[in-house]
Length: 383
Ligand code: URA
Ligand code: ZN
Image (cartoon, rainbow, N blue to C red; front, side, top):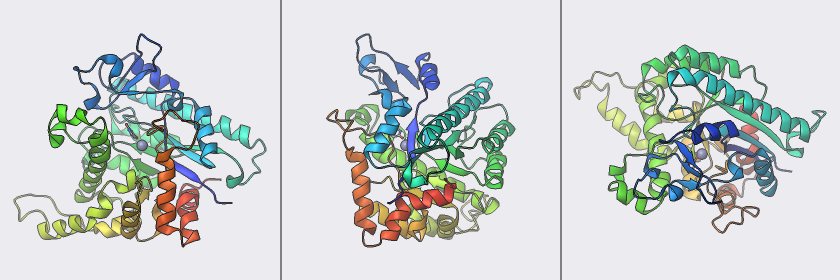
C-alpha cells in the first residue's frame, strides 16, 4: 500500500481563533449577528470598508480548528500522515511582549494534539506508518520577540517535542524580509538542529500590482492567491539567495510552498541576471553576489511541495530540483474546500493534485510513491 503524507495542511487552534476574535484590525475574526459562520479577515485586501463586515474575508468552519474534521478529511482522501502547521499570518502581528508566550502555547498545543491522536490510532506504537493515521507538526516562531535569541531558543526547544518536525515561517522575518543579517542566528539554529523551514506566503503583492484595491477585490482572492502568493515566495527566497544566506548556511533545509512559487520556472533567468550583475558593485551597489548557483541551492537546500495543481508546474519543479526526491505531496487543507458545500466528499483541490502527480510521473511508480509520502517520511524522519 502506498504511504501518503500531507506536508502542507494547516490549523488555527481554538486559542488562536479566540485571540483573533478579540482583535478589530487585520488579522481578525468577526462573528456575524446571524447564525452564519465566522468570517476570517486575514489578508489586507480582505478588510475593504466598502464591504459589510458580515461579508468580509472568508467564512470558516470547524475544519479550520477541529482536528477530528481534519482526520475525517485525511481518511476521505487516503492520507496516512499529516504534518500540521499554524496557518498565515502565524504570530507575525504580535507585540514583542506577546510573541514568546504565544509561540510556546501554540507549539505545546500542536505537540499535545499530535500525541493524543497518535496514541489513539496506535496505542502500542507497533503499527507501520502506512497502516495508521498519524500527525506531526511544524512549529511556529516568536519572530516579533524583543531579541532573535528568543527565536533561537524556541527552535532548540522544539527539538525536545517528539512530534515537531521543523518550523513554518512567512516572508517578513524580523520585519525586514529574509535577507536581513539579523536573521543569521536563526538560520544558524535551523542549520545546527537540521530543522526543516517551511517557507509560506501571506502578504502577496501590493494591490497596485493588480490595478489597485478595487480591481484586486473585484475578483475575490484570485489575484492575491494565484499570483501574489507565489511571487511573494519567489521574491523572498531570491533575496535570501542574493544576500548569501545559502553561502553562509550551506546545510539549511527549506521547503517552499506551492512548488516554489515561480522559482523553478524563473531559476535560469535569476541565475543569468546574477551572472550579468557579477559582484553587484559595477552597477553602483556594494553587495557581493552569491557564490553558490541557484541550481546548486535548488538541489541541496530546497524542497518543493507538490501543491501546484498541474503537470507543467510539477515538471518544472522536478527539472529544477534535479529529481523527484525533493518534491512532497500536500493539500493546503482547510483552504480551497469544495464550492458546492459537499465537504464530506472528494475535494477537487486535492484530486487535481493527485491527478497531476500521476499524469506527470505515472509511468514511474517509484517516483509517484516518493512524492506521495516516501520523501516526507525520509526527510522528516516520520515513524
Ligand atoms: N489562503 C490563505 O490565506 N492561506 C493559505 O495557505 C491558502 C489560501
Ligand atoms: Zn498553505
